[in-house]
Length: 185
Image 1 (cartoon, rainbow, N blue to C red):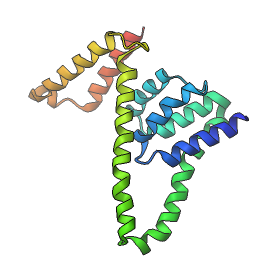
Image 2 (cartoon, rainbow, N blue to C red):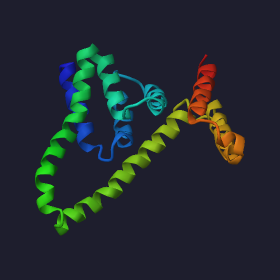
Image 3 (tube, helix red, strand yellow):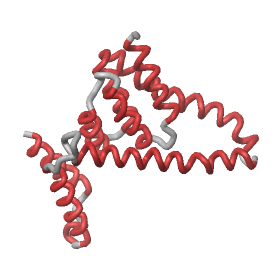
C-alpha cells in the first residue's frame, strides 16, 4: 500500500474515533508502532513530554511526526490533515443539524452515552502512558523511572510549602526537562 494512503487511512480513523480530543488519540497512537515503523512507543512518551510543554494537541503533533518520519514533509501534511478532517466534517454536519435537534431526547441520550466511551479512552491513555513511562521492558521490571515517579509525587506533596508554591510552572517544566536529559545520557 502506498505510504501516503496508509497515513491517510490510519490518521483519518484515529481522527474519526478518538472522541474527546488529544488524550483520546493516545491509545490509537500507542497501537500504530505495532503495525508500522513510523515511530516507536518510546517516541509517544517522548512526544507527550514535549507536547505538555509546547502548544498544540498531542494527536496533531504525533500525526505530523509520524507522517514526517514515514514520508517527509508531504507525509507529515497528509497525516495531520487526515487526523483533522473527520472533526471538520462532523463539525460542519453537526452545526447544520444540531440546532434543529438540540432538544431531541435521542440526541441528548446519544451525547450522554458518548461520555463513558470518552472516559474509557482517556483511562486507556493514562494506563498506556503510565506503563510505557515507568517500565522500560515488556516484563514490567522495576527500573529507575518508577523511582523518579515516586520522587515527583513527593515533590508535588511539598507544593503546599509557600516558597515552592510561588515558583512559576515553567520552573518545574525546566527542572523536569533537565532531569530527563541527565538520565537519558
